[in-house]
Amino acid sequence: MTTTNALGGTPVLTYFPAKYLGLGEILRLFFADAGIPHEEAPTNKDEWPALKKQLIESGANPIGTVPIVKIGDKVYHQTMPTVKYFSKKIQKYVPASIEDEYFLDQILDIISDWRSHARVLWGQDEAAKQTYKAETIPKFINAFDTFLGRHADGPFLLGKDIMYADFPLYQILADNGIRKGGELAGILGEHPRLKAFAEAVENRPPIKAHLAGRE
Image (tube, rainbow, N blue to C red):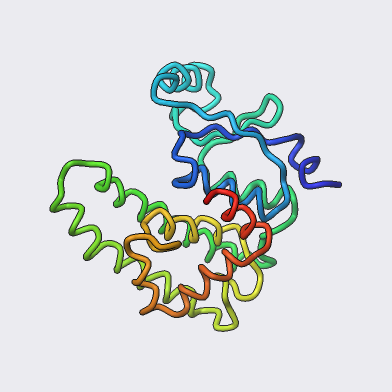
């Protein structure tokens, strides 16, 4: 059975035009690495109010957020559980033990915490932005460097094999300008485990091709 058939059809991703940032890109990285062809059905600021209303009123996504993934008549929302669910459907990127699954879910929860702090970057409070860069980012960087050290054979969260939580971890680095020549790329020089992790993700052939195609 192909991965597309395992999911029940071709995924259609809806997200904002911030094509290479944010939660939508987590799903693109997952689809690329898994070899799952997908389609894009982007929304924009003019279309979004009507789409949000439709999602809420139809019950397809009562919280009214994107990204969403449609497969046939099913709508999947909330990125972290969606990536995990798809991983289980295709029987890939999933650990063998419940203990390891718990560890990965801890990582997903902490990534969500980091994203909630990052909202200051879209505001007007310049002091809050500077505090975020000087204090919040280093706090999370140090934490994830420690988590990666729990499996010294690396480079991924559970060692040599990439798992569903590795895609969101990579993307939160990219979203914060810590990869690919971003403003804070130099911070990883102080964290060799995290640097090795990011490079290992980027050097996976399908992801390398995906990243090259977006430059």
